[in-house]
Image 1 (cartoon, rainbow, N blue to C red):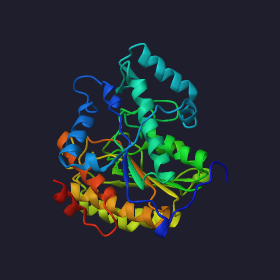
Image 2: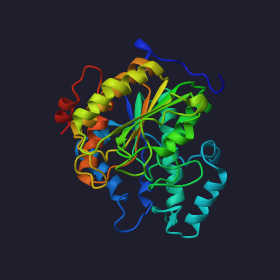
Image 3: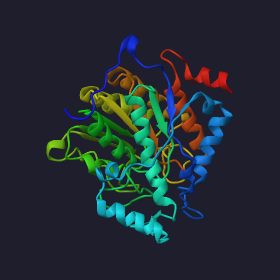
Image 4: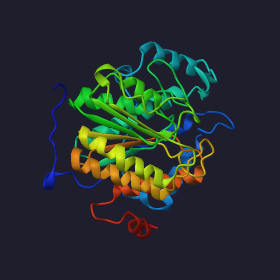
Length: 344
C-alpha cells in the first residue's frame, strides 16, 4: 500500500464533529449563457440559504486552490484537458456537446471545482474536519476520460477518489451517486477496478439522459461486482428511494466496508426539478444523508465528503442542500430538524 500513512481515528480519538465547506465564489464565473439550467444562480441560491439559516457561520471554510495538472490527468486524458483549456481560451461556446457550455473563465472554474474536492478530502483525512461538502460548479459526474458530457467539464469526484488512493494509500473508496441522472463518467472511469465501489441510484435510463445505468451494468473484468446501479421508474419518491437503500445499496456498502465515502450529491430527483420526473422531498434527501453518514461512522471513522452535482429548481436546490448539510453537521444523537429550528 503506497502513499502517505495516516492514523485511523476511532472512539475517543476521533476528530470533532466539524463539517467543512469547500466553496470558492470564482466557480460562479463559469458562465453558461441565458436559459442554461446549470447557471451561476445555483451557487448564489445555496449561499443565500446557508446564510439565512446561519449554517454558513457554523461551517469550517476551507481555502481552495486549483487542482494540479497531475491530479487531473490521473483521471482524464491529457489531450482532453489541453483541448478543454484551449476551447475556453479561444472563447468557444461549448465543448464536445452543445449542453457543455464554456466561457473564457470556465477552465479556471473547473480547476477550482476539482481543487475544492481535493481540499475537502485532505481536510477530512488529516483530521481538520470530520466531513465536508463542496458546492461547486461545473459539476462532474458525466465527464468521461476524454470528453465532456451533460454540463460536466472535469470529473470532480473521480479526481478526489483517485487522490485518496494515490496520496493516502486507501484500498477501498466508495462513491454513492444519488443525482437523478446516471453518473456515466464516474462509472466508466472505475468500472474495471475493484478498489472503487460505485453506486448510482437514478431515474431509469430508458426515460432519462444519459441512457446508461441499467441494473445489468455491474463492472468489467477485475471490477465486476464493484458497480451497483439502481434505476427507478419515473415518479419515484421517498418510499422508493428508501426501499432501494435498505434492500440493496446499504447492504452492498456494508459488504464493501469502505475506508472513505464520497457522495455525488445531485438534488435533481426533487419533486419540482425541471429536468427529471422524480418526487424526492427534502426529508428524503435528509434520510439518505443520515444513513450514509451512519455508514461512514461505522466503517470510515466518519470520513465522508459530498459534492454538488445537479439540482436546477433554485428554491428546491437550496432547501435540499441545507438539509443535507444539517445532517452532516449533526452530532451523534442530535435531531437535525430541531437543530435547524434552533438555528433559524
